[in-house]
Amino acid sequence: MILQPTIDLSSLPIDTRGLIGYWDSLAGGANKGIPWRDLTGNGLDATITDIAVTDDVAVRPGDGFSITNGFDHAQIADSPWLDINNALTIAMSVYQDGGVARGLFQRDSGASLGVYECHLNNGQLRFILNANTGSAYLQSSSTLPSNTWSFISCTYDKSLGSANMKAYINGVQDATTVNYSTAIADASQGADIGQYAKSNNAENCKIDFVTLWNRAINLAEHQSLFEQIHVPLHGRP
Image (cartoon, rainbow, N blue to C red; front, side, top):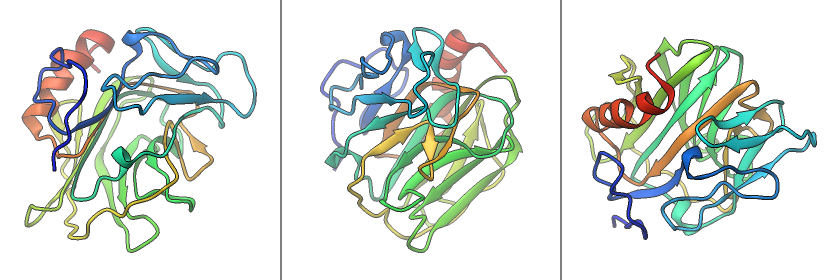
């Protein structure tokens, strides 16, 4: 069943059916006392968590979620909205430094890795499903440019006969695809923006314009989000 957002998201340039969560710095700032609001109205507000207790972790309007050390992340409480089984998109703008193990988004499973997640490793995008129960793993052939903003989308559509895990980077489909025929498992541990494996964060990076869907957006939709939202906000890589 396609669930509907509860507020008007007409500013997005694609069909918003299946949009589960939407976090955008232009909607306002956030810090340890002010959550990063989920703009769909589905209640998936993200609490800024900073175990190291620095003062500079925050979401700044127009500048994204700045992650300054290995503990900063934004935590989303568990919700049935996060149980996405047969089709999925995780998309976001990211400014990355080319470092190892930069966490972007993870649906927590209670173990180190998530039931769905994406992260960066030396600038390559990794997309993983059911990490602890017979996982599927995609690593992009291309590398995101360092020290600049990029836009990425990771998609899964179980209904496709083949090549149903895909990655899009800056308006282009990556050459690597994976075929996976198992539904994504449910979980009960919430989700994290800017973290995976409970400790690998997007240190020295920034994250913005994060969207989570229970359908797989296509290349044309990725390109529309890239050209009409990402580029005006963060420029062309």
